[in-house]
Amino acid sequence: MIERLAIFGATGDLTARYLLPGLAALRAAGHLGDGFRLTGAGREDWDGDEFRRWASAQLGRHAEELPASAKESVVSSSGYCRADVTDPAAVAAVVAGDGPVAAYLALPPAVFPAAVSALHEAHLPPGSRVVLEKPFGEDLDSAVELNRLLADLVPEQAVFRVDHFLAMTTVQNVLGTRLVNRMLEPVWNAAHIAEVDIIWEESLALEGRAGYYDGAGALKDMLQNHLLQLLCLVAMEPPITLGDRDLRDHKLDVLRSVRPLTDADVVRRTRRARYTAGRLGDRDVPAYTAEAGVDPTRRTETFAEVELELDNWRWPGTVFRLRTGKALRRDRMEVAVRFRHVPHLPLGHSGEPQPNLLRFGLSPETMTLDLIGIGARAHTFVPLTLTARIDPPELPAYGRLLLDVLDGNAALSIRGDEAEEAWRVLTPVLSAWSEDLVPLEEYPAGSDGPGPRQREGTS
Image: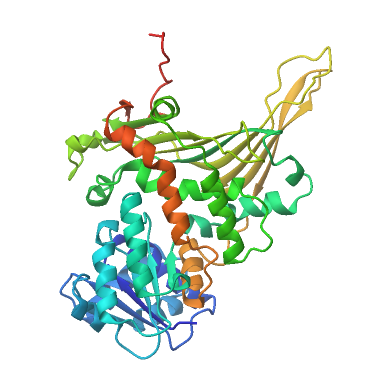
């Protein structure tokens, strides 16, 4: 296990909300020893004491449930360097020390190439690892170039392109449930499954993130990485093992099988929208274009939906619908697998039963199966719902990711060719949207999103 972690961008929201609590959870669970050391690097003109006071305050705010001793251990093991991530000399001072280091780039994607170049010139110690947050690159060309820079820095097995969705318990259950249950695996194909909805809808609005979000939008922020990863787990062929090579090979196969979208497909099978002023709960929310830091001329979307089909043996005719949005009426984060109707219903029945629906709730973590039964009145169909709440995991998602990074377990990391293929899938969408082939719709904050799509010939 690597015992040194250097976080570039250590005074940002990601470190405060997720990385520091993740480290404290590792310490509480006994996964970090006394020899572990954390070095934070940022633009603030702080010394080590100021960083430790800040880290202690963030842990108090975002990790209340963890033992005080674990939080104090993480704080006491921390140091700080003021550093420009594009300056090789400053970067070298951050990673200096005995033994390998895990360099975590908690930075905006636009800074990745310069930071990786600086790490290269700083000469990382042998055995070191590099961690990058999503999105990996800003388009296909930038992802290819970033992969080239990383290949010059460290071996591919030392690159961790992390996506915390993959460490969520229910996300793991999406794969596990279908693979280990005899009743599901034989029907996990297009003959039995009509549609799969992969949804991340949140009531959260912009919340001060314009500096990043306005340059990315919903498609790049959520759909290109998180939701495509969920698609891979739902649709992949059963791997021989759950090791990194087999998992990543099979995920890549799914992405390669996505039917390429033409301009006509993009017009017909995608939607984009952004929120206008509205009300969320007990507060008024300004229109996205009125949020601080937003450039209205960018036409950034806060809602994105894409329908995909896979050209392979298992999934001909099944629709995979990926949808994400901000400032919506309610939080809805789930994978919903909708089965086809049975071939024949008994004569004399009353009512039209809904098809079976298997839902994996991502937040909170639940599993729900909607079935059909017979009601008190003979021959009347009634819905039956079975719900299971998933036990809390030992580690939060970022704790699991950090443990994998320090241990060198790449199973939940995204391989370079996989990252590029994900961009290939959505490049036609980005291109068509940039040319305004798909209208930018609007929806009020606090609503369910844009209304029903207007079809040709309707008013």
